[in-house]
Image 1 (cartoon, helix red, strand yellow):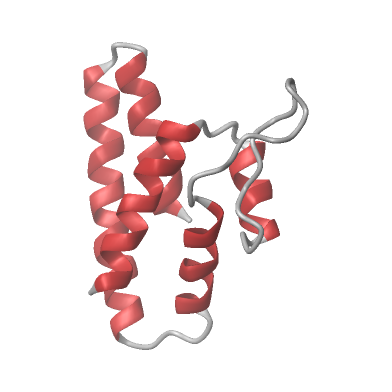
Image 2 (cartoon, helix red, strand yellow):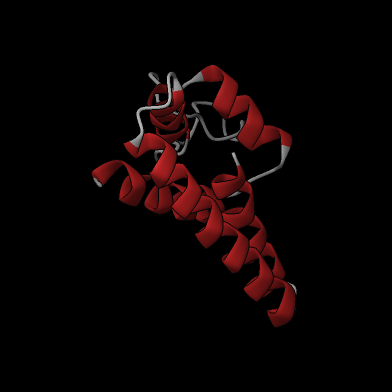
Length: 108
């Protein structure tokens, strides 16, 4: 979902000191949010479910039992979206930023 990727990429560009690319990612995120909101308002089949699944995957992750183990997503987190966040190496800050964006979309 482009909202997630552009949100995470914006933070990466900011961290790397590239304000121009961060701004471009923010613009992509904003356009993606507008399109997603419009499609949700039209009741596109399955879309709301996917957005809610993404939301479960970006809830705060917890520390695993083993000291060097990776953080664990919530027990009810969607496995496919968790895999997506891990594939792209999203950290806690990026997942939180995605969570905020998705929450705002779902509240509408």
